[in-house]
Length: 272
Ligand SMILES: [Zn+2]
Image (cartoon, rainbow, N blue to C red):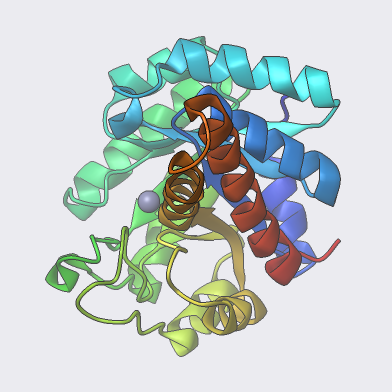
């Protein structure tokens, strides 16, 4: 069954727990994610990013995920990740996503508030919840892009937008950390978590390390987005087996590797 992210994340905040968001770009990833949710008993947010629709369309994402949720008999949130416009988010809501992210983090504070409020109003009609971002989580390749979240503006933003969850910039980045290791701002996480009622989301979970992530959880992160580590694991899974196996077996090994990597995240970070 498809569920809303609002209650799931509020419960995570109350229980000082983390919900994992598993990003997918193929039917094989979806199968691995839903199967992993089944065997671990952990409810996931399964997500497609706006930028990944060239690999996997919204219709494929929602249709195929619904199929596997029914097949394995598990619940999950269907999330549209990093939506940049009202139009693309409306398409995601129409195709059945129960949760959407509006990423206005590159805009001015006022424009970010305006677009987030508009998305929130629209999502309400579909019974969906909204994640937004304040501060800016950049790419690991260019850590100058990161703009840490300020406590006062986060409070003001949450109040003005009534966002259901809030992505904060506290030292992680998207992608692979080739240049520099992430330096998490634990004091900032703690302060944000104590001064906001809204669940906090950490983007760029890959490559951060479980020790850092467990501390981030302890100080109040309630949702963790994982993508890069999952696709690296899949690629390595495929590379290992493509040399002496048939293509179709290599695809299954890539799927298995995605599942195993996700399982490790769940087992190390989520209370069950
Ligand atoms: Zn992100």
